[in-house]
Length: 436
Ligand SMILES: *Cc1c(COP(=O)(O)O)cnc(C)c1O
View 1 (cartoon, rainbow, N blue to C red):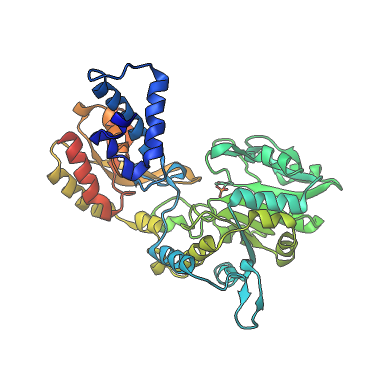
View 2: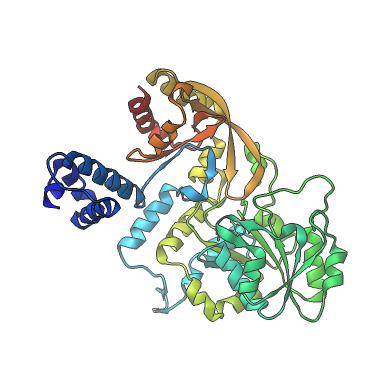
């Protein structure tokens, strides 16, 4: 054990992983095969131990470079935060704050009030509640209004999003009963009307985030659902998922239903994620009717779903940036959306000049995060020479700061839209080292 522990190549890992981890790696190697430890086998054992340590050192949480061209990539941590959000987290995290304290009256107050003013300003004076994520928001809504009762959903909207979040399962877990209406491709308001009973507690509309039904279709119109809910006195809730805050046509993308659209159509409650199109931290935001929000505020379940000060700090700073189109560009995903292909080609030149054999090619980027699932938009990528095969993608992922590339028909592409310009030099250096 000591001879391996003290081997210089192994000892190098001690600083990062610690001695205990190295001992575990050595034991793991000996568990896999019995070695007789002598001068002849030592180098082979050291090599196996290093391979094990290398894998262990890749497992911890660390910063990566997204070269996939998918702006909101759940596996890569969704929306990168704006500098203002990072500053706010650093400020609040380093000291004390008025998180649950009314500094004017000198008495205890609620953390949930901290972002209400800004949300009210951005969304037409609606009341708001912030929880851990959009899934938690849905659980809170269902638990508050529909436990032991019926929730009507169109068959065209029974979604499964990533990570096993299936709307029918979430409904079941919350103790609500799912009442499916209509068909996969067509649901009319009369289908909802026909399913109403004294047990109906909620009318739910869900954004079909990651799929599209095309052709002979009639999705249930939000406005008609809201009007029906109001007529019969049943709350209408819309799970928007990505929660478009602005009209994406501004960036040359197809129109996506916005939070404002859902509120304008008359939904009583709208829920969406903080780390998708909002470009902020992981959070679930519930907007809408003050009396419904008040009922959720007094639900004991809220305590288990509550957000911490860091989330509120980052969320508040991000929401402030949404006050104008100009300040919004300081949010990384909006900067990426607004970048022209000409600007990307200029950056591509630096790659082509510095690395022999790579080419600048037209590429297609995706918003991701359950937004416009079937629509891509123009981007620019660096194509690595085919001669190096696809194993290079694995080597890029193993860089000290992993680079996650896209592989398209066997070609490795580095899409420049999602690589921060400040990271160009690091990407160039890594690629040069691998294929130079
Ligand atoms: C992404 C998404 C969710 C889940 O959001 P989280 O913030 O990850 O919990 C729920 N519903 C829809 C429609 C979504 O797109």
